[in-house]
Structures are given as C-alpha cells and as structure tokens.
Image 1 (tube, rainbow, N blue to C red):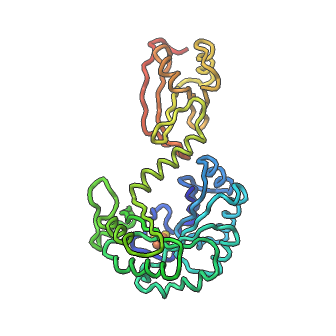
Image 2: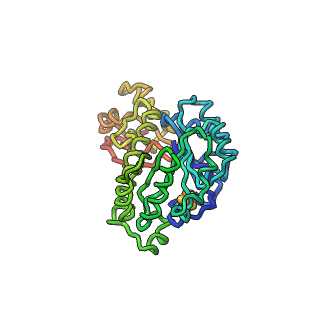
Image 3: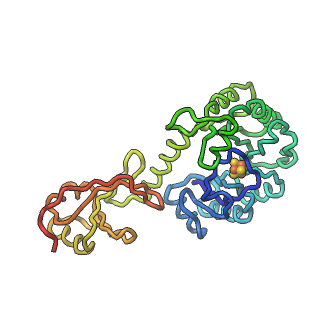
Amino acid sequence: MVLLVTGKCDTSCFYCPLSSEKKGRSLTFADEAQVDRDEDIINEAKSIGAMGTGITGGDPLKALNRVLRYIRLLKGSFGAEHHVHLYTSTIDRRAFLQLQAAGLDELRIHPRFELWSTPEKIGLEKALKGLEMDVGIEIPAIPGMDGEIEKLIRYADRIGLGFVNLNELEFSETNYQALRKRGMDTGNDSSSSAVGSKEIASKMMHLELRIPIHYCSSAFKDSVQLRNRLKRRARHIARPGDLMTSEGTLLKGMIEGVDADRAAEYLRTNFDVPRRLMHYDAEKGRLEVASWVLHELSPQLPFDSFIVEEYPTADRLEVERERLPRSKRKWK
Ligand code: SF4
C-alpha cells in the first residue's frame, strides 16, 4: 500500500512530480483513497491484501506524529512482518530514532539535489550512526546530472548504506515546465519518461561498487506495480457474481432504471437466479447480476441490462459499458 501522509515538503525539487491536488496540502491518501480516519488505512490495506506499506509525501517528516501513529497502527494490526518503509528528504536523527522505535523497517533518503555533488555536507553519517533499520538512498536518475549522482552513490557505498534506488525521471503536469526549461524531453508521445534517464541509471548500475543499485522504470511503476495492486484489491472485494480481468478490473452485469427489488424477484421466480449472484448496489442505485447470467438471459428480459467493466478502486471508475440485447416486452 502506498500511504501518502502529507503533500507538504520544504525541499522544492525542480523535478517534483507531486500533483497539484496534493502538493502543499495536509491530506492523507491510502493508495487513491483519501483518509479521514485511521480505520480507512486498515480497510484499504485489507482490501488489497497489502504485505507492506510505503510511506511517502510530500515529506512524511512534516507530519511526524501522524506517521508514528500510522506505523504503530499498521504493525499492531498486521504484525511485525508487515514491512514499512518511509521516504524523506529531511535529515533528522531524533526523528529517525523515533521512527525506528515505532517499528519502521526501512528508511529511503532523498537528499536535496543541490547536495548530491558534496554528499558529506548532507550530514548522513552523524544522523544515521547506530541505527539498526535498513537505510538507503532513493533519487530520480536526472539527465545531465551523471556526475552528481555518481558522487552521491560512491559516498553511499563508502559510508556503508544498504542500497541505492534510482527511479526513471518522469514528466508530470507539475514539473513539465521546469524539466523543459532544463532541456529535457520525453522520447515519444505515449511515454512520460525523460529521455536519457534510463541510460544514466544503467551507467550507475555498472559502477564497480559493493552497494546494491536498483532501477525502477516508469513503465514498471505504472503498469506492473499498478496492475498487481489492482489485482490484489479486485481479489479481495470481488463478489460471487464478479469476474476479474487480467488487468485487475472487474466485470459486472448490471440492471438500471427499474426497481431493483422487483427486478431481483423477477429473476429469482422466473429464471431461478440464485440470490448470491445478485447484489443491490445502493451507492450506484443499481442491481448487479453475474455477467454470465445476464449475458444468457438478457434477450428474454423486459428491462435494460449491461455489462460494465470498472476499476476495483474507491471511486470505482467505469472504463467500459456494453448494452445487452433485451426483449421488446414492456416492464410493468
Ligand atoms: S523531496 Fe520529494 S516531495 Fe519534496 S519536493 Fe522533492 S520530490 Fe517533491
């Protein structure tokens, strides 16, 4: 689960991809769903079968007390094996010790980019001394900054950090102008990744160092990670009448525009449709019926029925709707 605890951050990276909806705002999101109460976090983690949580922002250390509470909540609800990592650009030994005491497993530090070429000024050695949790560096691979990135990685290796994560730099609505101003571009219309980012990551991964260097491409983040998350969630929330697609969306049969109780009764008495394959969706005001049942019965039914495909997310975004054939008889 991705837990964005606040959109606030003092670092002001020119490449910050955070959306304007979240940037600078004290809002919490568990995956795509806004969090109002602590239970929302637990429910989201359960609904996707989360094995761990990545706490992100903004800068989570801008909401330290909330983060400490969430870590205890997650560990208390799902046990010590629920892995929690946190991303921050703040170097604060006191906060790190508190996070460790609360149960944080891994700290991913994103040092301000102005210090990458003089990493000893970041203050990491002093801040991390004696910490037992895993600590590494996580930064985007920025075209034109090979020298700075290499210095930072060599430093991380020298002081014995656990890993370096390099993310492919992506254009977003909020960083587009800043990246363009620095001469960066996307390779083609369908990709948002910056040209040259992947090559820098590859160059860094060939350095002869002990520290493990991981690379996360935007395609992997967008497609594989997202699809896996959707699938886990779909598996948890699917009802007996829902079908999960290979993309992690749900296919549902659906009847609209008639009284749902009467339509359900009609299907039961005339066609023996079992109750467990029907569900009244109060939020959307419609009767859901297993798609394979509606496919077979719709030509005999005196009301409109559809097959809809929707995301298993909080907003249940509908991505496709197919109208099924119906009988010409009138529904009375
Ligand atoms: S540290 Fe992260 S959230 Fe803060 S400005 Fe930089 S990229 Fe954005």
